Each structure stands twice: as C-alpha cells, then as structure tokens.
Length: 358
Image 1 (tube, rainbow, N blue to C red):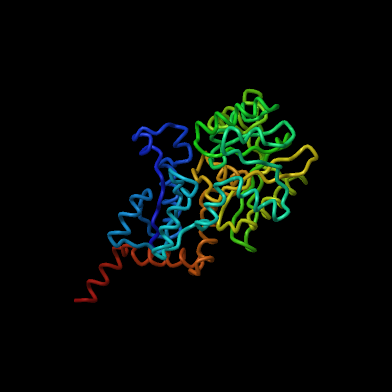
Image 2 (image 1 turned 30 degrees about the vertical axis):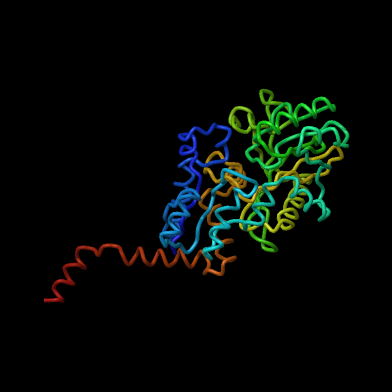
C-alpha cells in the first residue's frame, strides 16, 4: 500500500517571508520524518508530496496513491484545512482524518459552537463580532474572552483577550479584526481548570485517548493558555494526566462533541470548567499537531503510556477500518513476510543451492 504524505513545511513559508506567528501551525521536517518512519514500521510504502500546490501538480501529471496521510493546515480562508481533502475527494483518493465539511466547520469556532449548543452540549455563551461596531451590541456579562474565530495554536490569544468592561472589549475586538482580518469570537470567560482531550476513532467507534490538564506556572501569562505560553510551554506550562471525576466529565463532553461534529480518526477537544464546576466545550481540532515531542496530542499520549508509534498505529487502524482496507495487523504481517523473503540466504544455503544446480 502506497501512502502519500501532504504537509505544509514551516521553513518553506518562513523563507518566503511569512512571520513566525503566521506559520505557527505549520510543521517542521521532524514531524514529516516521524510520521514517515512510523508508517514504514507498519509495513507501508511512503512518498512525500508536500503542500497543496505540489499535490495539484502531481495529480495533474497522473500520480496516484492508495491513501494520503494529510497534515496540511493551509494558508488562506476559512476552508484552508479542507482544501487538500476536497481536492483528493475529486480524485477519489482516500485520506486520513476528517472530511472537508468537518474541517471547514471546525475551523470556524462560532459555527462549531452553534452545532455543539444545538446538541445540548455545554459551551460558553458567545457572540461573533464581524465589525468594530458589532462589539457595542454584545450583550453578555463581563468578564469575557475574545479571540480570532478561525485560528489555531492559540494565535491571537494574549493577556488582552480577557476583557472586563465595554471599553476593553471594543479595543480588543478592533485590534484582532485589524491583525487577523477575520471575525472575533467573544464568549463568557470561564475561570476553572483547562483540559485538552484526545479522541481516537470515528462515530460510535470513537474513544477517549486521555485527558491532559494544562497548568500555568507563576512565570506564565496568568489565567489563559495564550500563544506566548504555548510557544514557551517548556518554561511556562506543566501538562498533567487527569483522571479525577471532573476530568471524567470533561472526557464525556469531549467525546459527545467529537461525535456531534462527525469527526474522524483522531482529534483534540479543548474543555474548560465554568464557575459552577461544569466542564464546557471550547473548541475542537480535527487536524491535531503530530510533532513527536512538542505537539499536545503526542504529549497527552505519552502521559497515558502510549508512545508515538502506538499512537500512529491507533490512528491508522481507524483509517483502515473506515475506508474498508484490511486491518493494520494484516499489513504488518504481510510486510514481515516480505522482509523475510528478501533476507539474503546464509552462505551454507547458497553453496548447497549451487551444488544442486550442477
């Protein structure tokens, strides 16, 4: 089985003049190498493709793959994470992770929260500010929290995201609208514990991988999992596996949310506890980072005694079952047999074969 790898390589975009923050969601070469190594250990052949422009060129030249392992984040628009899967759909080439509809929905935090709220899943009250004057119409009690409606990696989240009055809200929304050129999500600020929950699988087969609590130390920007805190997590953040009753309720909210948006294969759901101790849905990431050391999902997996190879095998097991391919163990067994067949014969056996031919 030939698996193509699609990805946005951060260093390529930095070389084009994009900033560190603009490329924060893109991947380092170590991520591509780690995924490729894990897939090859499972017995798959792999081929690096690159970003959507490279994929488009290869497809136009007639290149095809049995499956594409896609981690492209995209660069422009609300549908940027959906672009590669949509292009592959047009060629009937299956790919990992959620479909274009889910990826487009999940990137827009406001639309996602509409779906979650309609399913009766707790989420903070919110409003979407599309113009500076819209901030005047927000009718929610302070404190509030403001962030770009369609960014990841905590981009646009800083100390001024928590707003305590109308003046601060207007100033924060105006600055975010200007910098990110997209609407601003304004929601009730939740003061409690924060978790990120890993999910593996699709639909009724989806399970919780584990819950990881995000704990900020005294040197961190207080009270928020900001872009600064996340980028400097080794000095400012402690991640801890959580198994207490509150974490258990957070896992239930996360799994219900994943099923509500029709997520596939793997994802992360961010949860925060409100003033009454109730876990609330914040956002979902159906295209989570897979850097073997620095990304939240692999960190969460390690905290739950799941190493990187095991994590990738769990993901691929979900993918193969979903697309109707033979199970992962069958692929691994086939690869083992093939490797054994290709082993060089011992010298004594070679001599016997030569004598027999004579």
